[in-house]
Image (cartoon, rainbow, N blue to C red):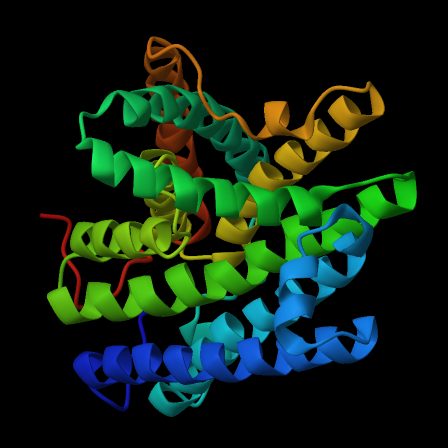
Amino acid sequence: MNQKPSIGYAIQFALLLGLMGIAFMISSLLMGLVAAQVMNKPLLQAAADLIKPENANLARLLNTSTTFIAFFIPALVVARLASKQPLRYLGFSSRFSSRQLVLVALVTLGSLFLSGALGTLNEMIPMSDSFLKKARELENQYRSAMIGMATMRSFPDYLLSLLVIALAPAIFEEVLFRGSMQTILTGWTKNAWAGILITAVIFSAIHGSYFGFLPRLALGIILGMIFLQSGNLWLSIAMHFLNNAIVVTQMYFLTRMGKPIQQAMDESMPIWYGAIAIAILYYAFRLLKKESKQLLPIQPASEHATMD
């Protein structure tokens, strides 16, 4: 992470956003055409039918392909333009300890409590009736798409869901948001916390869920802190995967018990759970920072960043 890039951070950020936009349009059209061909239906009808449970496996695979093209490839291209060692520039390193992984698991536990408390707080924020109506419509569309992809009728479906809903997004999103965007914004602003916060806001906003904005904002900040303290993108990926895998596993077992899948998607918990979360996260991050310093004596943040 401490490499000086060959092109400026502002140019990197502009390139990243531009490539993301182009890649998203291309991947959306390409995956729509694939769906229409596989399902033997018109393009618009195929897109509408993808959210149906019977098309869950196809929806998972197409969504994974879209995320790979729109997130992973732009980040890799920009990293290659900025450095002769793009994977290292993105934060990939083989240097991590088993103790770090245990602490990342503890951070994941704390983040689940925090997300639940913030989900409740998000619901309490006063908004106009017209805004809430539109937000509910978007939330229902988001949930319908997620329910379609998360439908698991067998154990093989569960394993596939772990791969394409938990692992693949964890890798592709962390490469884009922490490895690329946070690194660029940290270097551009010369402030590690600015890089983390701005990236977390974009990370949450891009999911398009108003009622999940605060939980995902917190998740983005936590993932950014893991990356900052460890200097290793694999640890951010591990935490992101654990977070996703817990939700997928919860959905699988609830549906096997005959309960509605919507119950597993409910992020709300009592607000006082946030106090438990903060205590867990404070303790876990103190230990993680200590362990990471022993493994990497040099501060892993960008050389142009400060912790002001």
